[in-house]
Image (cartoon, rainbow, N blue to C red; front, side, top):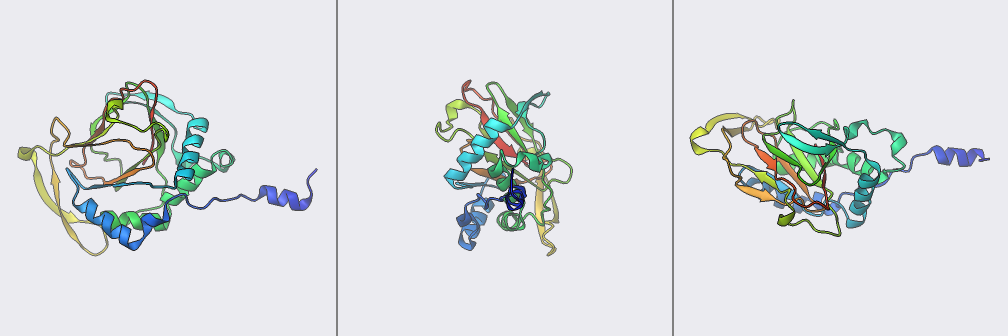
Length: 251
């Protein structure tokens, strides 16, 4: 039997510290990332290297691959294994996946949201959790689309590929970014939503048939881009490797 003190301690949740690398959030690093974001193409995006400490990301990878159940889903647009929304994970599962819970809390924290706003200029972000785990096995893919879903302002992908078997171009599964066909481009202006009345030029159009850039799903990196209707076109190349899945958290 447990004493009253032991019962009280058992009921208390032990919350882990944020697994996100604190060096990413420094003022100098934020300024450097904003510059890289603004100079990127075919539309603005940024890749964060070493999102978490290696020790913590390995634990997150282990928790996801050993505790999350993913269902196979296939439509005309995609073929992928996907979990339910991570927003629905309850405290009963926290003991089995404490590092995943800590990551979810960290990336939707006010500090990290402000960081994303600073490096993208996207305007205010809410703390509403909207993400899931995805596993692209051999033959899985995602066709070209612009990620316009409801009121989503920012899309992100955190890659949880095998830390001991680095992903290569031969494995397939690259994220492909598409420019617009010049003759299809329509240019308008709109406010950025930063609360300062800042106006931005917006281009919309039809994507080219071939991507203008590719990004490998490298372990412990995070891709971030602003959702732009008719502009932020991307796809996931078919996975060629039959022995290792392309695992990620996206939202």
